[in-house]
Length: 156
Image 1: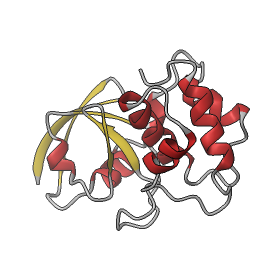
Image 2: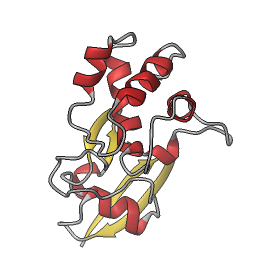
Image 3: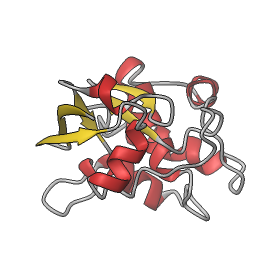
């Protein structure tokens, strides 16, 4: 067991974990952050995307010990005082989800995209979300939501 300390959604945690524990497992099983979902375990789907020190990572291929001393932000850390974050509101307004399984990862990757490119074209949005899969929507409303969020300064 290894003792780790990290900040997750603004709260400091110190826990003992097995060295092989994935960040997604730690978030879900030890911290109860079930908004970060397990999709493929192979980095193909992006459903487990979180931010590690402000950059998106697929938490199914990051060990919890690698996040020791770092800051993690999950989809649950987006809303403030019960109000949806602009990216969350945009996904809601634009009907950018159907089953919702990919939505947390899509939102987290969208925020990373918008941080790098605050005013992306549709093509740049599609390219920026390339590592995140949705089997339901056809992506059009997801692109629309990211475009809407870009207009609200959602990258912060």
